[in-house]
Image 1 (cartoon, rainbow, N blue to C red):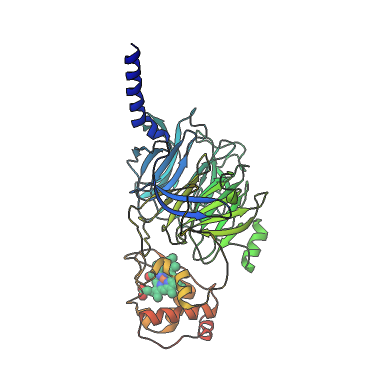
Image 2 (image 1 turned 180 degrees about the vertical axis):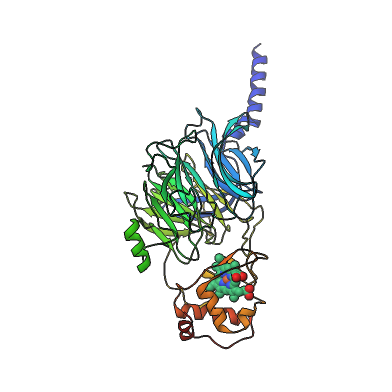
Length: 499
Ligand code: HEC
């Protein structure tokens, strides 16, 4: 008996070592980089790869990471075992360029209410609809779809992000669907933050008890998060200038399209006075295309405690925006990972203070040098005692004047026409064979100062009238030097005459 029992024990122990024990230990992940902060060391590892534009990441209270991919796929990763399960592909999602499955959040009490909320675009008749839907998680699948709300969708600027507030209401950041009349129209649900009961009804304590609108005056938000003391922050894409991070107040008007960034022009100040608008905490010109936003309240990385972590697409970086104690001001900005992993779409903080972020190198706007092998990926950032001979460190952001024509071109033009001037077929024209560049300079200056809308693609070339004469001249001389034989220089006076 004695012997038998110990044999059995040894067999069980062996089995345990082979299976269970491996799962208890941290899984071995590919380490990409080490980051050295003032006193903390962080490692950056690949948690998942081979994804396609993971637009939204969420963590639930049960140790799972939720992943929404733009084409309509929802997956669940058990963060302890690393197992990744595909739960659902939305059957009717309409995905092109920046539309598709965009926002996702899970119920804050997921154990009691295993609900997942999704926002996606679909075609209905000849129109596009942006739908807010709830699914129930059951036996590794998502069932019982229940539509909470549908608003008008568009071919672009559909946002979006979803999150629960500390009041257990659902907050939805919607886009203006590229229609300038929406954001300031209180009847339209586009270009707004909407506040919604869990069953899809309107909360009685909204600014207007008959409207979902919580705050207005937005263009295209890509980030929305509550801090641990209940403040609501968003990130928003500006047009050619003035990307923003906003602190959201009940009933607030944030000014788009009449105000871009801070209220620094006469017309903007006039509008602000009449409409009592609020200014962003920070704005960026040249633009960085700010996207996912998480509030870092954890003590695990003390250098980042009480900051907003912001991923950027165009900026291809992570921004650490430290908040003051009250949370109503950004007191410093640091840049990390610039150009290292490509476009960064979303970010979320895990329960132990670890951070997950997703790359977006397979989206509609690929950058030179990307995608990298295995894109798109989910990266994990966590504390580590490991060392590296070539660690990364954040650099302080500086908002200085840009000087050369090529730098100005990269900041203001390359997002559409690309670094090498080749554009994107059928979306943004190539500058290489452009008659406007080789020809009469006044037509070229007119286009850059006034902007234009393409009759073929419907895409807009924004107006660059906000640049000063010297900057416009620098850019155009650079463009003509690169992509035409016409070496006749354009000087700042000539720009002034064409304003
Ligand atoms: C947001 C995207 C975007 C940005 C940024 C942008 N453009 Fe354009 N650009 C366009 C679009 C769209 C068109 C086509 C407009 C049309 O057909 O009416 C265009 C057309 C042009 C053309 C004419 C090309 C042709 O068809 O011959 C030139 C030249 C040009 N842009 C230069 C610039 C310069 C210089 C900058 C930076 C100061 C710039 N663009 C920034 C979108 C952009």
